[in-house]
Length: 407
Ligand code: PMP
Image 1 (cartoon, rainbow, N blue to C red):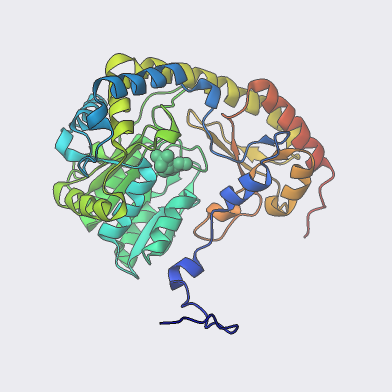
Image 2: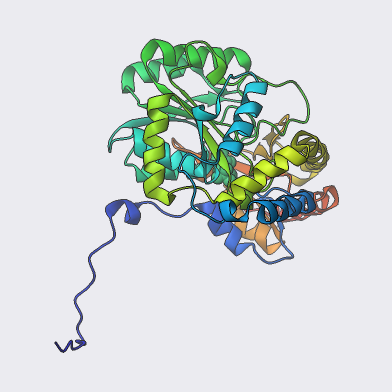
């Protein structure tokens, strides 16, 4: 058969509606624009690379490839390597939530856990409740599943349990998604009494709770607040997500999903379709690291450095932001949330900041409800205290000449 290529080829069929409708993350777009090395970047959520335990991780990979190469380089089970599942279960149990290795699966970052949950739980048109503002890539995962995303009113402490109760009664959602500790983007932490109230709403009204906790171990001060998943009443309806990204290294793409048995099975089936399993060599290297090294001591060192960086940001903000601005003081994590005076639009101001070689993420894209254009997310962990001070000086210069507020 001869195939002739016609000059007027018919168009290819269109993308799926969901692919056409859901845009890329504005944070990733900003990172692309600010990739110039001279830009001091408060925009990305990047852990400090110089604090990775590169030597320890290299040793763990070398040991695995020396002692277990045939296993490490082979396909593995979808649920994850037993040695790593056992180690993760032990860490969760030690933090107050009894868990066995069969109670969790290893995921390719906790981001994959969000996609698996969306596949396993959400029918197109189902309602998902989220914090407002909310972690952006979770909004994307739910949008891809066709969810109707409804924001729950929040204040400086996070979710309002009474508002949640009303919304659950009215909207009959499938699930609530929350980052209860050192939230992305705001850095805030939901207090213990509200966690109990959220668990109670879920128990009374019938609701899955997805508690995403990649930042909880990065605490600089104050004391640990128990997981929502640890409250009585939440046991058969809480999903807990964790990750080594912020405490070991994000490039290893290792997270986990702890869920009741039937949901966990459904997520494992969804994972078969997604990637068969998380890379074996990474799982075994992490397990080896956990066996040979002291991850908690490493996390303590990282948290001490991050605390200094948060303090550097808190010190520089009063001079950098216009009078009337407000911001919070997170007790851990990677992000701080600020609000410029009424009338300021941080999206419109970003080009001026980038022209002064400093970047941030405007707060607006994080809102599932009405955005507050005056808000901004600042990541305080990627630069040294000196660089943070310099970045804030540049930001101050950029904002001093900002276009005047519209009334
Ligand atoms: N959840 C939240 C709240 C996050 O901030 C992030 C990373 N920025 C993730 C999940 C995904 O992390 P990873 O896939 O690297 O575990």
